[in-house]
Image (cartoon, rainbow, N blue to C red; front, side, top):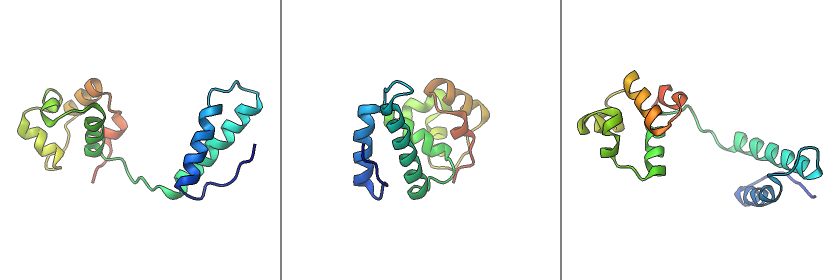
Length: 119
């Protein structure tokens, strides 16, 4: 096993390929040790290179919409009328606690993302 630093995205892709082969390794094995070292390298690289900034409720909603192939109309049961959905997605109206609960329960968006101070 030859392990080196992750310097760029190509290195990162290579580490992910290596991780795929050892990810399910049994604890206490050399493969599990390799997995742990590779995960630590990925975390260090991401922490150094990727400033995700504070969580953003609207970004979390849009991300879930993209994941699930949802349209703004699909958000109406969780947020309210089409006008209200539009206001939320365009950051003209903050989420109410009721909306937060419905979005969490219905779309499984974490509370932490929905309650964060967005931009």
